[in-house]
Amino acid sequence: MRKPRDIDAELKALQEKTKQLRAQRTAQLGELVEATGADTLSLETLAGVLLAALEQANGRPEAMTRWTEKGQAFFRNGGKKGERKGTGNNPGGPPGA
Image 1 (cartoon, rainbow, N blue to C red):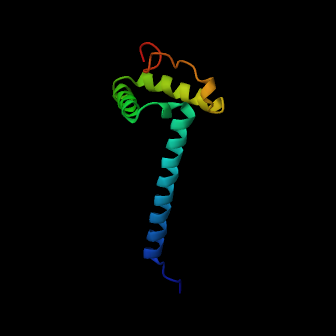
Image 2: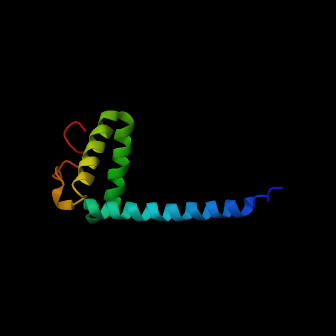
Image 3: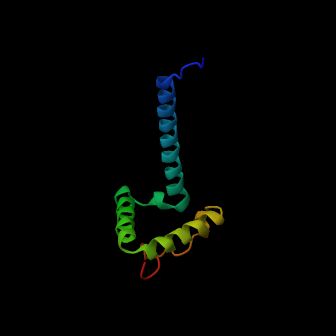
């Protein structure tokens, strides 16, 4: 006869793993903010930029494609702040983004 599974222990282990993964994700998001140089923005500005990006993403899928390409290039370059392009006065990205 097989040994019965301890469902409660498995559930507790999964909940702990979920908690650990959420903490890791939060840390990675913080590292991303620092790596991109966005940590120099005020919290209000950063929140506004993210909210504007979400609004644009809903209305313009082509904007998400361009942002994805920029993000991929950023990571290909080692995620270094000094290698970023287009950090001028156009926070929305290239014209029409």
